[in-house]
Length: 287
Image (cartoon, rainbow, N blue to C red; front, side):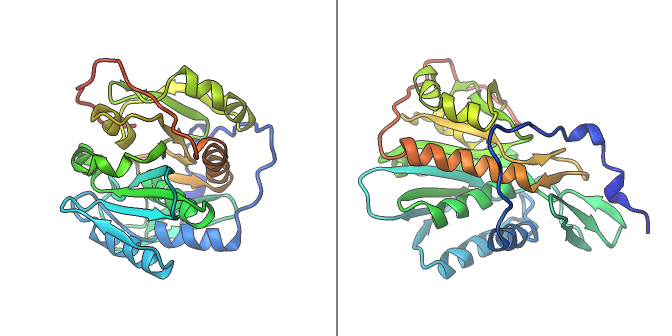
């Protein structure tokens, strides 16, 4: 059989030099990430991921609610204020009859044994789902939302209960291709401003992230709808998104989570107020 793993575009992955050492992902976290990647969840058929997420939350002893759109809301802890992590449960790839995940120490991809061709692993946004579970495991107080059908027009975040965010301090999402982008503007809105970026500048420098502009994702839709705290989307270690050759890189996923956790640890207990003043309403897709 041809070694498709060696045919990926080498230009699709450019390692980012970090100023800190990134530890290897633990065996438990690798198993969690693999279990997420093994679930196929195209936008018009994401039910298997709903079942997986709810089952995992049940196993963790966490309570949750869901709405008619399919969004799943979780609050861990008993606090007045919470940092918030969000993700989306759907992927752009259709289901493959022979879907399997190929793992190595650092790079994972997927393969369809039926067609004998690569198949997108759905890192967009299975990596984001992994980040939500990491937050629920590691943070003492946190709110999490798993959104439905982001890939076909932000269906979940456009219809979610905005009151859920009333006592949040900031909202982060890992839903960006690559390993070094910190999104400041998306969905036609500014999602975080200079005041917030100044507070985290040392962390962006530490993990080698740089501010840039995105296209669209759930946190942008939340800002369109009036979210009053700083939000951000960030690169999280998936590459060649929306293609059959999509792959994920474990150290970059680790780095993204370390950045998100540090932000929550340092700023998650105090409201990071931010109000977008740019015109909104643009119809956009992508990240």
